[in-house]
Structures are given as structure tokens and as C-alpha cells.
Amino acid sequence: MVSAELKRLAADNSAIRAMFEEGNNLALKYGRENVYDFSLGNPNFAPPEAVKKAIIDVLDTEDSMFVHGYMSNTGYADVRKAVADDLNSRFGTSFGTDNIIMTVGAAGGLNVMFKTLLDPGDEVIAFSPFFVEYGNYVRNFCGVLKIVPTDPETFQIDPEALAAAVTERTRAVIINNPNNPTGVIYTEQALAGLAAALERRSAEIGHPIYVLSDEPYRELAYDGKKVPWLTKIYRNTIVAYSWSKSLSLPGERIGYLAIPSEIDDFEEVSTGASISNRVLGFVNAPSLMQRVVMRCLKESTDIGAYARNRTLLYTELSKLGFECVRPDGAFYMWVKSPEPDEKSFVAKAKEELILFVPGSSFAWPGYVRIAYCVSPDMIKRSLPAFERLAARYGLQKKETV
Ligand code: PLP
Image 1: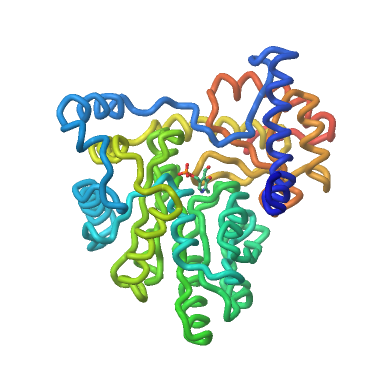
Image 2 (image 1 turned 120 degrees about the vertical axis):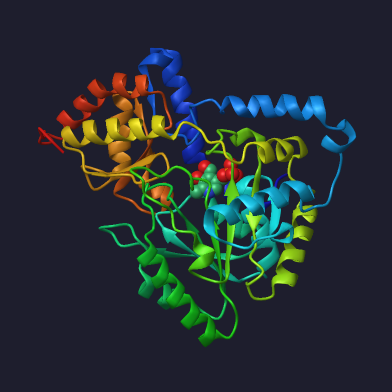
């Protein structure tokens, strides 16, 4: 018998699992090459060659007891120092070894922080639309997720709405920049507004409100756009990073938390995070991968390839008459449903063998998310199916976008 809580979770999960199974069933029936699966955020591009070389180099040159052994719960000191130095050179920060904790991906880092910060009933604010797992992570620690909508035109943070949502139980705000599912990069101006709102409200409620900045897509920014570095804008920021997307290593589960010394109660929070990493059963981040990423801090996946996918999909779907938010980052495109019920749009797309995720899975009905971390060839092959889908809605074609 499983817990009542798990039964609830399983019921909530069934929509996404159903889509996954549906994709496999369609592939069996029609052939995988005829099914256009844009549902998952699993990078299609292989990790850079440097990752393979680094794995071999670690195994060839380092002591195996050291490479495969237990270590401090925060990770190898030399890896943490290298991560800190890299961040300092890129963002003008002054991190040292003690500011970095190696984690089991961004998901591991976020769970560590919620374990560290939340008492039962404490509130965490997220901006919708948002990554669907946040609710599960917060509930793991009996926290309450409060949802604040972004601006429906720009999908930027609305600082006034944020300020109004803060209560005496607010412990943290989670932001995800660049954003899954919209592809929007929160601007410096929006983040300055967030900082001002939180400084004011923390003073009013008499305790710090930490921002957890979830940044697995930090490097995936297009057209020379920059993702603002939040610890410089809001003092009580903790960054959760991962190499899942930037090095195409989602299965390897490797990331870090950057906890600046300037945050309130730094010693307590950073020690707490180290203990949380242990007691949650992570113990430490995967050891071999720590040694590998230390050697690959200047590497990244082929961002140009994602940029080309983005331009192709955005241009072609816009020409067909779909209303798309032009993504500035991540590898998702946010598209307005041509009918009010986006689940019905998803169902019609499925009839054309196109799979994408309804916006209600991100607490934002009326839109869908198309993941373009797929092969360019699949995007090209899918265009006639998108054309048939547009025709079913009588969408007006455009010559240029
Ligand atoms: N946060 C967001 C917004 C994501 O989209 C994902 C994965 O897709 C994660 C966190 C989890 O990343 P990781 O593989 O680093 O745990």
C-alpha cells in the first residue's frame, strides 16, 4: 500500500505519462519518423567531445579511490573552487569554495534548499507559467506553493503582484531564467522591480525572503542576449545551476548551488544545505561527474544549433498564422492556442501526429509548449503536419514575420 500523498502525486502525474505513452504508441503504429514529438525537454544534441575526453582523462590520471570515493557532502573542494573562480571571472562575484555546494542537478539543489528553508506551512512563491515540478518539490517539505501570474502580454515578472502575494509565511521565491516554458528572459528591469518589492516586504514581515534562481538554461540565450546575474541585483539570492542542458548531461545529475556570503544567516543556511544534501540521501553529487565538469567549465553544447531550430520553428509557425512568443532563451516555444481550450488544440495536433504539452500543465491554460531540443530534420518534416493543423483553424497565412 502506498501513502495517500503518493496516490495524489500519481494522479497528478498521469497527464504527462499519458502523453509519453501516447507518443510511443503512435510511433509503433505510424513509424517513429512520422511522429513529431515536441513534448520533452531532453536535449537532442550529444555532449561536447571535451566531456568524453574529460571522462577518460579523469579515469586515466586520477586515483580511483579519490574519484569514486565518498567525500564532503558539499563536494570536492578543488571542484567547488574551480566553479567559484569561473563564476567570479564571468559575473564579477567574489565567491570562494565555501559558497559552492555540488548537487544532484538543479532539481537536487532546489530540494536541498527547500529542505533547508521550509517548515510545514511555509510559503514559496512561483511565477506562472512555471516548471511543473516546483509544486512537487515544495510539497516534499510540506510547504505551500503560491502562484503569481506574470504579465500576460510579455510574460515578465510583475513586482506589484509579487509584493501583494507575500505573507508572514513567505520564505522563498523561485524564479527560472531563461524560462521554461515561455523562453522569455526576465529583464534587468523586471528583476530590479522584484528586488525592490522583496526588500520592502521582507522588512515589513521581519524576516528574509530568499530567491532561488533556477538556472539550468543560463547558457541558452540567443541573439547576444544576456541573462542578468541575480545575486548582484538581490542580495538574498541563491543560484541553482545544472549542466543537464548546457553540456547535454541530464542523466548524469550534476549541478551546484551558489550561496553568496552576503545573504542573511549565511553560515546557518550553507551548513543547513550541506546537511540537507546528506539527509535527503543524495550524500554528495556524483563524484566522477564533479571531476568531469571541473575540466569542462568553458565548454557548452552547440547553442548555434538550438538558435537555428528556434528561428526555423518560430518563422515557419508564425507564417502559418500561429501566435508564437519569440523565445530569447531555453529551448521552448510558447504558442497561443487557436481555440480557448488548449487541451482540445493538443488533441487535434495529436491527430496530425504532433505532440506538445498543454499550458495548463504549467498553470497557464490557453497556450501550449513546444520543445525544440529536437533534430532540425524533424522540425522540417513536421511542417506539413503543422500546415494541416493551421488549416483546421482557418489561420491566416503571413508572407513575412
Ligand atoms: N528547472 C527547470 C526549469 C527545468 O526545466 C528542469 C529540467 O527540465 C529542471 C529544473 C531540472 O533540471 P536538472 O536535470 O538539473 O535536475
